[in-house]
Image (cartoon, rainbow, N blue to C red):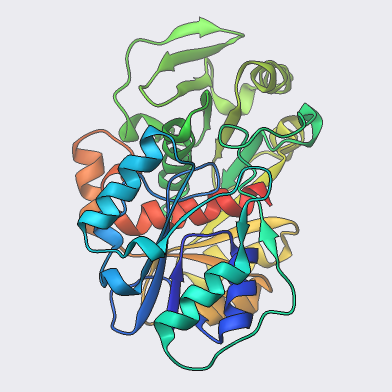
Length: 342
């Protein structure tokens, strides 16, 4: 029996160690217990229904008992999830991992596990539970997304992450430094206007910035722009070209870097092994190249996005983010957002 969970990775590892369940990437197979959580800045979904394969093996977390949370619960109950499998967060405490493991072990109907510690995790979302205000310097704001060759899907990841952040509530900017600039294919772009020595256009789920001259001529105005955007936006996502100028990387000074790779070991994966403190995505994953091989090369955990040609094609046809059209991308981006906040 396995566990499919939308909770943060560190919480999943605690649950896995206490229940003996192996974490899996999806719940489309039999004998999978699912933990489905309402969308927050650490992942989750807006509608639990598509993820409820077996109602009695599903645990649903609406987070907060507000109107949206009650609607989330109602959809789960209508899909057959027992009331005992619905968990709300306790304000000021979060959610007891021991309660989760007790329910999971009840679903498992195997060994009875006694928890020595009553561990809690907090969703870290100020919209749900008030916390002491964090200083801006410690918040992740600027996120660089890059790969080491064209076609790995870095723009797909960048725009999907932007859409995710916009959906949970927050002002988002994307800076397209790609060669060529591909963000325009993932959104409906209106007219660009000059702003802060760049060109800017609203694209529905964020604001898109791009240079007003060839990228190789961009100088200190990039660092000036990023400094301004840090103050104006909650999240700033920089979509880099495969081989960005080192001066541009220094100018951006991202809080987090996301490296997107595909199955090309020599061009996409091997160059990434020297990246430190990066988050890795294995995009367009194929059975011939196992995730374990990718992880052994970069020596770090890798978020897997299975190849979804139809979903990505539908997104491009509708001029929208793949986050809207691909379930595998939606789930993976939720995991990425959770990792970014850790």
